[in-house]
Amino acid sequence: MPLPLAVTLGEPAGIGPDLTLAVWCRRAELALPPFYVSADPDHLARRAVRLGLSVPIARVQPAEAWTTFASALPVAPLGLPVTAEAGTPDRSSAPAAIASIRRAVADVLAGQAAAVVTNPVAKSVLYRTGFAEPGHTEFLAKLAEPAGGPALRAVMMLWSPELAVVPVTIHLPLREVVARLTADLVVETGRIVARDMEYRFGLARPRLAVAGLNPHAGENGTLGDEDHGVVAPAVERLRAAGIDARGPLPADTMFHAAARATYDVALCMYHDQALIPIKTLAFDHAVNVTLGLPIVRTSPDHGTAFDIAGSGRADPTSLIEALRLAHRLASSAGAPVAASAGAR
Image 1: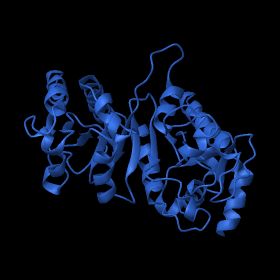
Image 2: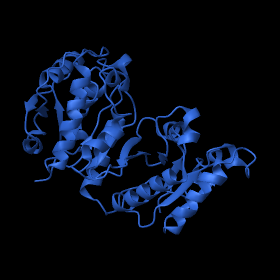
Image 3: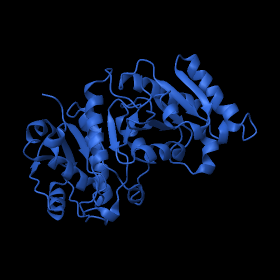
């Protein structure tokens, strides 16, 4: 029997529970792959009542999820009571969110689930409890590391049919980007992207467009020397390794339709350079995909939306797409998966 997807609770006071319940209600209409949620069953039941949804909850082990999914929402109990109400995180929020991620990753590594789909967390809530990782992606990498093995480098890619982007540096203040941006970092990121686009997305020769850091990609050194001294040498090293990479390219002309048709993934030098274009083009359906891990992980490309949690107004489209993409990547590694608009 095929393996189910492992869905995390996310921030219990956010819209993750709302979306999960709403998506399960549309499971047949959308022909969704079976999944289970690592959560507190009672918390999900209370949220379903608040939303006016009729959702039977089944307490299951992962192996039971596939056969349960058609008639009830399968929930793998965390053993932690969740008391957070919609829109108001409390002391139960962070422990439940973290435990859910741990459980989902462990289940995939143990061969009990096909992939991890994470609902959004509130990093500020996690930080207040001493959470040491910068974010979801880095925590997943630590959990997926083999015992005694080398540290994994996880790469965040935002994917949509229109565009796929990777920020080389992620959650950094702009003033720190220049100090942290090195040719080695660009090369390592490009290698991971090229490998996973081939292995997981089935592209025989992924095409990488590498953005410059400065306006006009540095204008031949007149607008900063990082593009000439850091980005260009990194691109040459990627090409020497047999990777189809070009750049540094002026970022302001990389994202119109004709430009997007010439590449499969855009490597951007900092967070907003990558996320502004994809959120403009695919705000409601882009998916966060973690590359560089031995497991498949996807996530909706939005936050916890405390202001609308529990209201029934949250749009489930990105979670739907995250479930679909996780299923495709997990079941067809090495076989073609529809790439972004630039894919051949």
